[in-house]
Length: 43
Figure: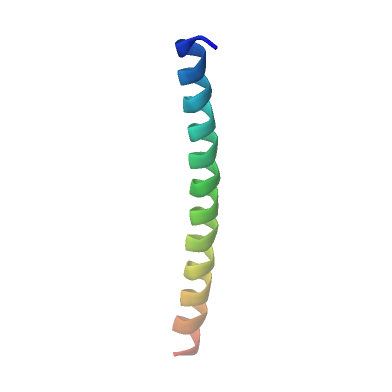
């Protein structure tokens, strides 16, 4: 395998992993905001 090919594969897989993490964290953040708004309503 060429070095350039290897590097581009590595970068694209890292990018994919990063996107998945961002999606997951965005989901967690959204859920926390929802919970927080409910707590404020009941306070």
